[in-house]
Image (cartoon, rainbow, N blue to C red; front, top):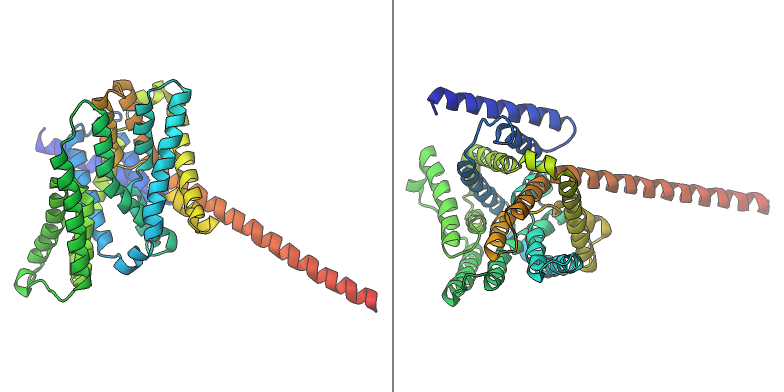
Amino acid sequence: MEMNDVLLAVVGVIGCALLFAYVLKSFGIPAAAAYIATGIMVGPAGFGIIADRTLLTHVGEIGVIMLMFFIGMEVSLPRLISGWRIAVLGTAAQMLLSVAICSLVAWMFGLNWRAGLLFGFLISMSSTAVVLTLLKDSGELETGFGQNALGVLLMQDLAIVPIMVILGMLGPEEVHFHTVAVQVIGAIVLVSLAVWLIKHPGWHIPEALRATVDKRILLGLLLCFAAAALTAEIGLSAPLGAFLAGMVLHASDESEWVEDHLRSLYVVFVGVFFLSVGMLVDLHFVYRNLGVVALATLAVFVLNSGINTLVLRALGETWRMSILTGGLLSQIGELSFLLAAVGIGMGVLDQQGHQMAIVVIALSLMLSPLWMLAIRMLIRADTQVMEDLDQDAKLKAMLGELEKVRVNR
């Protein structure tokens, strides 16, 4: 590709992104949906401006890592620990219910029980990138339901290790005890080290390493990607390592200058992640299987929202808080792309089934902001109805009292 073609491609992508962002913003839809729509438009299924999905996907993964790094710099460890019941028990219950329901559906349609297990794990993983982007855009990360969602997302990232072990035991490839041991021990050591550093924040980064802007930028990137590479190397989630690094940096009071100098890069890379998701949508496949795709995507939203809502309500949250958190976690996450690939290796999914899974995951990511918008409107409408009913009740009570006074006279 000639340099001029590259420049034209960049202009086309940025132009489409700005156009979609401007149009959708007027309807109150977050920019994430605009980036995904741009990915569909400029990808192989659209105008074909960008054809290298692999490169864009890897760049997008960097965006998710940086997103978790920034979130870590804003999270209070005591507050996160205080919500352990929701994070641990809620995530476990949500995954077990998802697996149980999908296994039941698989049995009803005469599918192998392994398919039910795979689909249960697949739909139970929510999107860190989408949820945290929505929370940051709305300024609700520090709210109760924002912290609940964050806790669940972190537990899901940790749960990917046992999930991969379980699926590996059911597949043709042998699971090695050494690999599992490294993952488990590595997770315990890294989390313990991060907690210790956060509780003993008396350390500082030497002034010589952050004396100039370029050194600060490079040092921030080094901290972010070194931690992500370490967790990825031992088989854990790379964004989890970036999140822990962000929390440690926050405890050292060094996070302000890192955020100031890296925010622009973070915005670009997160936008590229959503572009890469949009490029995964094969419009020809969607058109040929429109009914099934629409039904499956709607079922995912309803099932995930319902399961998370009921679990959180059972753990003592209010209905409003539970519904909002359930709506936030309604989509299928980016880690499910990995589980879909595992499904082919297990022989559970053929190429057609794999493409269906990819399309439903991508569409759930794209439509998640719209689903959340609908839930917010529903809650506002319900709240307004309750307020109106309450006002009517008060008015009737006042009229009743006046009637008693009139009769007594």
